[in-house]
Amino acid sequence: EKKKRDALNSQRIWLALKIAGMLLVALVFGEPILAATQSARHAFVDGVEEKKHLARYAVECGSLFSAILVLITGVIDLLLCWVRLSVIISWVAPRNSSIRNFTIPIPSLGVDPAMAMGATSGYSINVAPMLLQFVLGRVKSICGNKIA
Image (cartoon, rainbow, N blue to C red; front, side, top):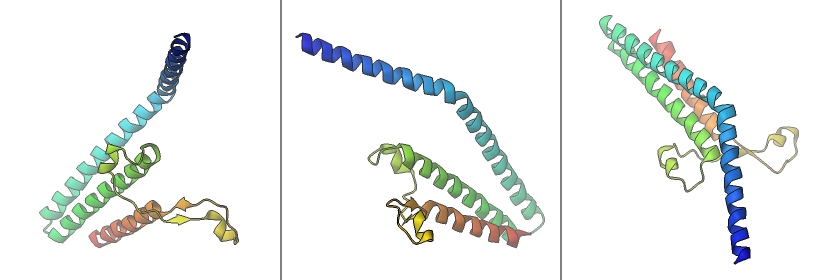
């Protein structure tokens, strides 16, 4: 009976320490994270408004092709945001998490950084998200050049 009570108390202490640790992290990092998310939200809204304005202006000027390209760059911006969020979620969410149903399934393309020196380090960096962002950025750049 005493062992069960001690084990239960030990579990409660660890739970209290974990909760206290999470609260401490939330207090220390919470305000900068809230400020960053608020800034990102405003930048996102401003970007959407800018794309809408550019598309309307292109239609008013009689260039439907330019308006479509502006909309394509907007979709690419959304895809880039989705890829970045998917990468961040993949760092913290377990593989069987339900939130992963809403992320982009990015393949793993591991590259050993020591290969540039002709050696192996035993670990690799997944370059697939970087490659995907590069390709989407190039497509967006090509669309932007066609608009101008």
